[in-house]
Length: 218
Image (cartoon, rainbow, N blue to C red):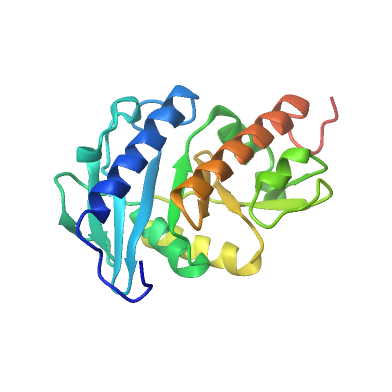
């Protein structure tokens, strides 16, 4: 799809099916239990159009019918349902990173570590071979910094915090919202899904090794 073009007919349906499939798989892995999590994919950048999962939907039973099309102001222009307030976070990530897909999970380890490392403002992960699954990373010696952002029920405030964090850390592949979960992205749905798999693995490794945070060595 050209960057400056409207969505082609059929693209919304294709993205919706792929997001629904990813959501059911994440549910199966225990990363988006109940109605948690939300997923989006870009349909066009100019004007901005996103396919994004509807709020309050059980991700284990997610279907393409549960995906909406929204514009750059998070207004629904296709589909039935209500977009999550976190739609604004997806839009912010797309604009800052030029992402084609943004995926948000609510795993146990992501939640635990977002609290345990909050005082440090983020979590550093290094030395693991699995880091090479992140786009552009070619060595296990890579140091990945996951900013941890304080949660807020005001979506505009939270989106501003995301913008600030991603501006300060231009090489970050993801961030955590404290007490909430992981956001990551990619240049395709497949790449974003791979990033979820890699990062959720690494979060579990760190959590099992040192769940209480950096001040306690197990």
